[in-house]
Image 1 (tube, helix red, strand yellow):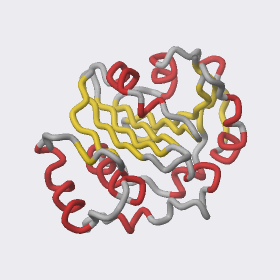
Image 2 (tube, rainbow, N blue to C red; image 1 turned 90 degrees about the vertical axis):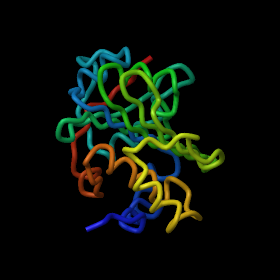
Image 3 (cartoon, rainbow, N blue to C red; image 1 turned 135 degrees about the vertical axis):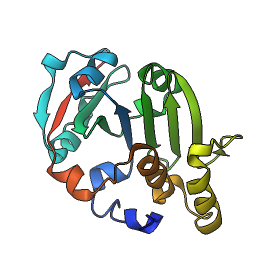
Length: 191
């Protein structure tokens, strides 16, 4: 079965009000949550297990020069959730985190500006932005899903489905509401 943007209609403001308005999801292959926290400059020992609800309620711990986030394992990937955060949209951070691995991120800010990034071995391979279109060169690995997105869903913004489709294609993970809601996240503040 081929996934479509409609398969991600569950990710809505009505169902995830504290998250859908402004969020960043970042997948990093081959790292544990603790390793990802350490790569970001945090101390895993200072992080606390929390539900998604608690993570979203506690998001106010972020300041101008810190980020509050949650990380959980998803198969061979560490999955980072930032309510109203944007580490996965910062190209400097993305390229650093993707050293010797693959990183996929999707981001939406409070003004509705949305981005998708795929970085591998410290290099951004592909990006997709609501206001900017997508990378000039479309790598073979995402050519087929981008053809489907361009042909069938050209009027959608990345957060309306295409970013989820690209993340699923590049990670092999179909994100579900149950995964988000029922998981325990390692949560804390990083500089």
